[in-house]
Image (cartoon, rainbow, N blue to C red):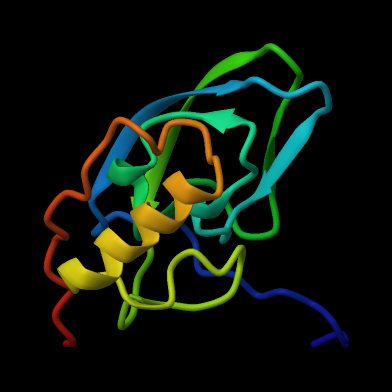
Length: 137
């Protein structure tokens, strides 16, 4: 073995195969490119990105870790999101979602904050019911 060497199992690697996914169309209404990383809570992305924010609470881009998607000014792009795994407790990012996204009160409060702060795509939607967290094996 060489330091830093990867020894991988033969065959395909399937990522996020058990998480619920969502197809969403995103428009960059801003005047600058916006890049979103693989593990960023998509609901809390830049205010200038317009999409159905309520539907994306508790989700992230369904892309490999450490990669990102770039949205150019005026561009519309279709992306696939996947549920954030684990306990689904989300803090930070833009401080919209502070807690367990399986709780209706957390989702509703996050959406109200997004509406108040002028996030595109948040004003005409209502927080949906959250899927149940994945069961531990």
